[in-house]
Length: 532
Image 1 (tube, rainbow, N blue to C red):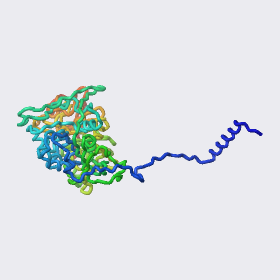
Image 2: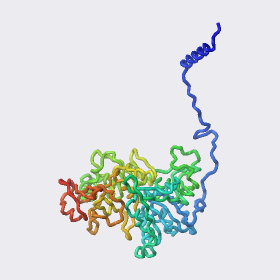
Image 3: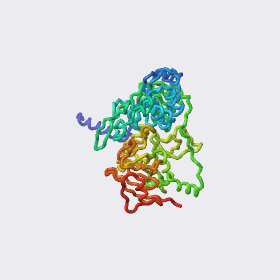
Image 4: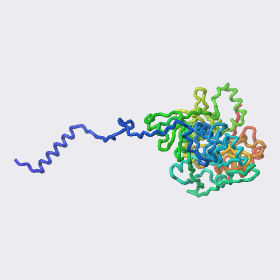
């Protein structure tokens, strides 16, 4: 019998199908010839570790733009700064840092040696010496909102020449109203270098200002752990500005507490890839704490209640706490707002965000819990709650500007009936700095802004006004004002206030007499009660 080719093909296909059905399916996966721990490593042998700190900083020259990481004294590259301070030939530096150091720590050392000619910072309140140098016309200062500072640095690192941001719109930052330098002799001598007026544009009905990227010549960075090729790990809140500055500069020098062999750090744990790092030295300067704050023993409950109820700050904090709901993400400004967690209603727990890079901030530590790398925005030592996360400054302010924070609670020097807020400087007298406040009030449609403050200034003048007389932190940003006399809702569109609550023993006429603008009164105001 002769079988046709077509029949033979059918039998072959049939037999193969039966065979395939009766056998287990085997999948073949192509595997690369190397993994994270290769048998024969193809890793470049060149190391970036320098034995001498003095030699590592030898490339810094007069006129350089020096980026210095850290927040307060957390994550500050004091080893590198100390070495540069011995270089008397290096002058006229432009130093870029969130803070201006404190005493002989941080950039305070270079201010004392006279090597810095200009500072670009968000907050200088911790350095009275620098504040006086600026007010006397002996140094230049470009005040930059904290989130804008981080974003201008990040932009250059990413090859972007400028950004538009809502932060600072319709304020002294946009107007260029903050002098960069006074003439010798200070404020009375007039302005030598005026502030930089910013271009603005509107997108989708919102006002934005143009900010140019900042380009660094040299970055000084402090890290917890780094391998010999520069892969870097930061610890808790010591990341802050260090990551973004390391990515920015032409020359990045990292001082590390621990220098380890290549391959010792899991790729999943690396915060800063080695491509951004040029030189590595051993950190020898001890960690410092700006404000060592410890948890206090709990007092007798009856005594604690009596003390709290008599303190007007706690009265204000108790009312503010009623605005928070369980699970809210909340940013608390320094000072009075930090009292709010003590007065949360029963069953209400919130996630506290700190702009220096913490979400899930806990209370002050015990002596056993104390850690110099875990601080809040006020530079106080704190703890982390279970479920907390830490990140760098640019990530933190993306959360804030993007409206991912439910409520921001701040103090203020003045608030207008339209919700304008002023809380960062008194021209010619007090220069605390902007810090993160301008960013915190930059998205009031998505982040409710509450101001806690005493109703009148120390001289008895009202702090709630028809229009603010001090430089603005934000325009039409505040939705609620809470003082020891009462609480107000702010209609930001109409520019009107409504008194919603009165403190015990306070009448409307007293509030009117101490308020610098007109306001409506709710038909049945609530009460800011003080339990007996």
